[in-house]
Each structure stands twice: as structure tokens, then as C-alpha cells.
Length: 354
Image 1 (cartoon, rainbow, N blue to C red):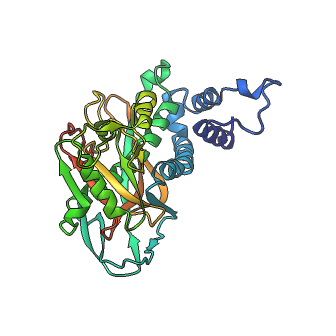
Image 2 (image 1 turned 45 degrees about the vertical axis):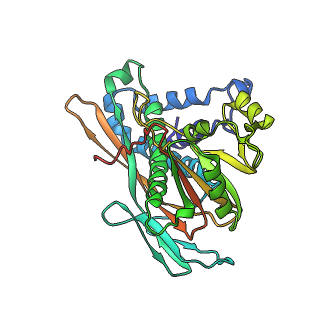
Image 3 (image 1 turned 30 degrees about the horizontal axis):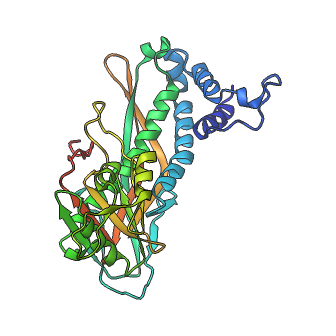
């Protein structure tokens, strides 16, 4: 199998599709195992330690091209409901334009500073440049386990792709958490309680409604804390009446999917550690954003993924991949944030001690 053919199969394996030129002795295309073909192709290049060392740069090129075609699409698909994502070439600057609305309040931008900490500053121009910095992850190649069939380069490649995607999500989470602590955010846009209080969420929605139809974005832990919405008749003292739609949604999916007319979009959660105790997304925070308007989260992915490696004393190899990205939160009092401190805090930034 040539390098070009392996690159093509790698992309199909990542996308779950079948190569157009499939000709496996007249077999049905649905029976074609593209993942197995990819693994076989990699094994031809890395059937031994010496083969791998000879062909590793070709292998890294396959990894880079696959990651750069798949990862941006994954990021855009996951973040598009609330984020504007730009993909630019190496050295090119991402320029974001502000939309001028009827409410021309002061605008602030929260993005990473030179110290690596997210900072907020006044934004006076109609456009702003979003700087990018390197984020990434790594994987270990254990040649003995690979030769025994216990591991494969395809698995290593998947770890790297997932790690880079997670690194982008971590940066977005860091920026949004930092925006909660911005001193200039009005009290009307920020609510805190030790349990979910419907009246506080409604108050945030009423603020956001001045800018657009409110949409609630929250991780599964926060949505679970909301439960079914109990509508209480004003001035009656009668216990709340639960919406049959909420009961049905909880029965079918485990979560409510609408609150007082506002759609609830679940932010995917995942674990940092193998013990399933630390999470990438802060479970205590929910965000109320104006739907159909300017997206407050800005993300840029810059240039090609880079890879380097080094060999350990036990002859295993560490492979690190990184990509330049930037994230910022554009704020002009048009969105709200709710913190429920009653939810167990599991958020952890895996890079904070590096």
C-alpha cells in the first residue's frame, strides 16, 4: 500500500466512510472494514521497531493531514451553537468583526494574556484580532505491546486527534469560566445559589431576551439539577404543577430540554482522569446566550498540526502533537451565567500544573 493510499484510507477511517475506489473482489462495500484496512496499512510501515523508525515521518505526515481535516470539523460541529470558529493558515491573523446592534453598550473581550491567564479588557474598535497559542497532547508508543498486537498505531492516532480536540474544548471552558469573574459584569447578568432556583434562571433569561431569544447551554450535571419545572400559580401558595413535556423528556432522555420557552443545549462532558472523578467542563456553570445573534465565543485554529517525538529509556516513544488556537469571549452585557455551588465541583484543567 502506498503512502497516498494509506492517507486516503486514514481519512475514510476517521470519517467512517468507504473509499470510492473500493474493489475487494466484488464484495459488498458495506462489508469492507476500513479501520482494519488502515491498521493493516500502518502495520506495513511499522511492523517492527526498525520499520517504524525508518517510516515514522511518513506516518506522522498521515497523522497531521488526518487531524487537520477532521479536528476542525469536529470543533465546529460541537461549538457552532454558541461559538464562531475561524480556521486560518500559519501566520495569518484571525480578524473578527463586531456586529453593531441597537444597544451599543460597552464591550469587553476576555482572552488569554501573556501570562497564560485569561484577562478582560475594554474593547473599543469594530474589529479585533484573536491571537493564537499552542495547545496539544501526547501519546506513548510501546513497541513491545504493538508487536504483540495489544496496541496499534491507529489507536495512538485516535488518542492524538481526541487529545487535540479536547485541548480546544478546555480553552473554551477556561475562557467562559474566566468571564464569570469579570468585575464589570452586572449583577443582573450573574446569579449564584447553592441549589437550582427557577426564579434566578428566569431573571437571567429576561436580561438576555433584550438582545435575542435566550438559549441555555449547560453540562449534564447542571441540567440534571434543574429537574422538571414546577410552574407555581402567582399568589396561590399552591404547589407547583409540573409540565407533562418535562416529565416525558426526563423519562426518555434523563434531562429536560426546554425551560420556560428557552431551549436547553447540553454541553458534552468528559473526564480528565481514568477514575472518572475530574471533568473538562465546570459542572456548576450554565450559560444563557442570545440565540440568532452574534456568537459571544470566538475561536481560531491556526496553521498545521505539529508533531515531535523522543525515545524513553525503556525504548517506548513519546509522541506529542500541538496546534495553535485562540479563544475569546465577547461581552456587552448580552448574556448571563448561573453558578450552582450545590453541584459537586469536579472541574480540573489538566494543563494547569505543567
